[in-house]
Amino acid sequence: MSVSRLPSSLWLAACLGAAALLPAHAHTQGVQPVPQNVVQLSASGVVEVPQDFLTMTLSTTREAPDAAAVQSQLKAAIDAALAEARKSAQPGQLDVRSGAFSLSPRYSKEGRISTWQGTAEIVLEGRDFGRISSAAGRVQGLTVGQVAFSLSREERARVEGQAQAQAIAQFKAKATDIAKSFGFADYSLREVSVMADEGGMPRPRMMPMQAKASYSDAAPVPVEAGKSTVTVTVSGGVQLR
Picture 1 (cartoon, rainbow, N blue to C red):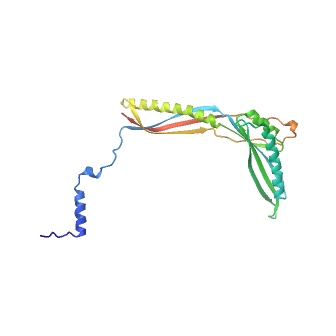
Picture 2 (cartoon, rainbow, N blue to C red):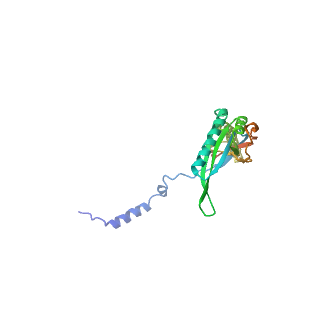
Picture 3 (cartoon, rainbow, N blue to C red):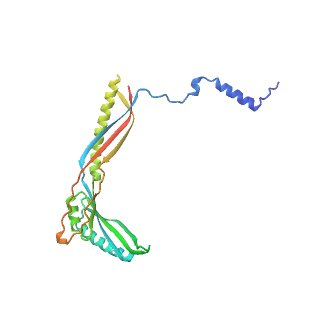
């Protein structure tokens, strides 16, 4: 006796009908249950310290009818300034480097290029404020354009470590208090993130653009650092148990 084959459309319908009869838990197999008794919280550690890193920018401007002449004048001024500043250089305490360089045309009323104007910079930076300000005072032909204070890499790492320790301790204390307040004996950590933020980032200060009269009149550039606030925030979820 032979058994006749069902048409493909009827066979598909039969399969779908059988699937509908499966137990409900078969459709939800593999779905993770919603976590219970989980609390999200955060805590911060804040440390304020004096800024220990100084960045001082000195610049000069030249103008002439010929672009090549302006470039040549700027190069001579920057080379002389770098040579003078490097006499006081000391790694980490006073580092000297060239800064921005720009050259642009200036136009007459008729729309033609009348002259070329260029600006060049050198940058003095480091942790020895006295050495930097004295070197800046001896540089001739350039004026102080910007002074910015910040934290050195080493100091930032040290302070972040302190703020992080504070934030973690506060996070743990807060999690313990919350667990007890809800009638639980303890908690376990589910996930956590740690983020650091330094307030009081380098803030440039514009200085009076006054040329020094002569080398004998050169004096250290007055500087006074402020403070930086480093904040580390710990946030995450804990499982009350």
